[in-house]
Length: 266
Image (cartoon, rainbow, N blue to C red; front, side, top):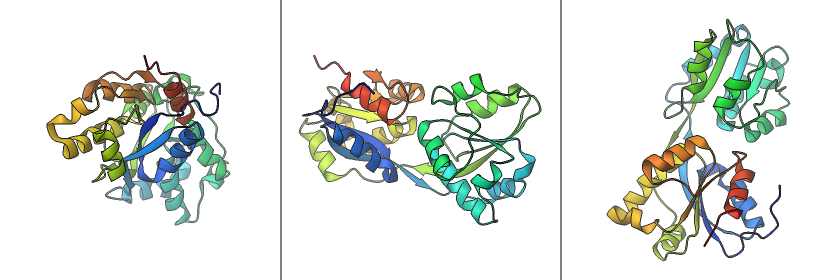
């Protein structure tokens, strides 16, 4: 990456992230001089019902591909597989695995699972566009978030004649509170940047800001720069707040950091 160390010195940044994923982001930004304020805007938990996923895993060898678009899906599928004496490492010898995004691919690699395809851009549309096989007749398993995810993957593959099984592998919900340190920083106009890491973090952040600051929430953040991690997050920013000042490219934490460094503060 082309950024220099400490490029964000004196910048106060809120990173909206799932509670259990915030430490990695915090570390990357702090290394570059930023003071990071937490605003956990996703809680990751189990789906309401494990049965659809468990049923799909019992017949896992009937699928040609498993497509993962998040590390949360990978973790929970691996956990449920272990309960029936299987693993992603083991099944990847016969079933192809596709991973959207560097973090998803990295977690699969840590599990020694063979990855057959990672799209050039870290978004679902890129996976559909560059998929390495004729989609007609393929049997695909897509483990995904229970609510609020996009249907682009399954819809696109079905249109091309694939047989798609979509199952809930995890659920994400809105946390109940903002840390006091972050409330104080927002109140005092100290925050320079809010970095959004998914469409759902935009929606949940707005919900939390309304809860804590009432009708004043929008005025409170009007001078703050917004950075979005990717196209869908940008759409959510436009729909619920305003157009972000910059969009990350690539659509991952390193890209998000670079976008924050490249912001124009004049």
